[in-house]
Image (tube, one colour):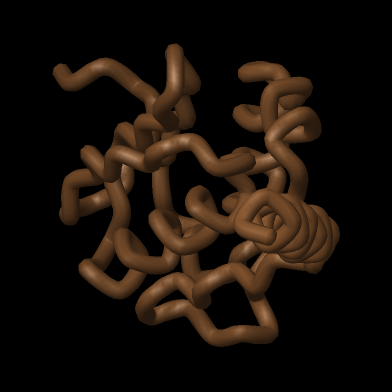
Length: 127
């Protein structure tokens, strides 16, 4: 009798495990980001397939489309498991906006915001 109960319990647990594995996961919203801007959840295989160059170009394209960052000089560098934002932006709001855009297009990589607040660089060397 004990053996029968143990087998039934094992089968029940296996069934629950299979059902739980097949259920869709709900991702937690990122703090400070409106839900309309969240990216759909992707599987680990898709994240692994994302190239550093693809992430870099996606972030740069998204930053260029943002009108509030028009006077900014932002460089995006992707290395290892992180994205770094370097350069100059005109305000703290612009710095925060650039970070949110980078996080939304980073493919799950960590975003390190090293942007400075100040006048945008023209690209010409100082005299």
